[in-house]
Image (cartoon, rainbow, N blue to C red; front, side, top):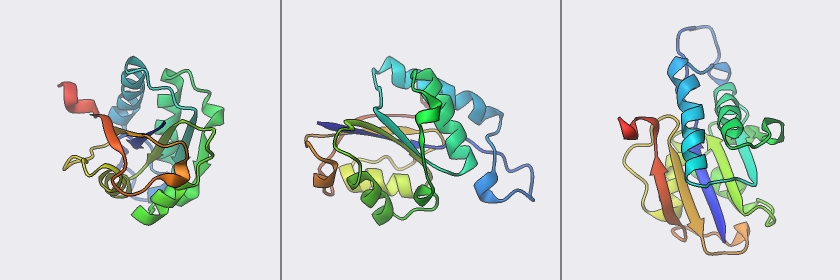
Length: 164
């Protein structure tokens, strides 16, 4: 069995108009939402074998904050530049290429790609995929390369404001 947790980066700042999109930092809400979602993942017992993140600053910052809450060494996060502005087909390809010794994968990235991937894999994606949302999928398969459209089952979906 494989599990995939799709995590959209936390809320980022738009305060500095001269900062490139790739370099945007998390705003104060993002800085608090990311560890909160990490704690929620821990409460659910989700422990990734591998965290792969977009190399964009806001995504890596989100991944690091979540990793700390999961007692996952932030230095072990894999930065993958292909995730930034990735299409559905690129994200699907990235997931299918994961090594089979990884059973629980967390993928930190961006919309709309993550939302499209959630829909593509489960057919059960919500209408909205807010910042720092987590969408966990179970696959009754032994290999990531065997994943096909709609073969996943939604385990849980959560986002920072869901408890407000």
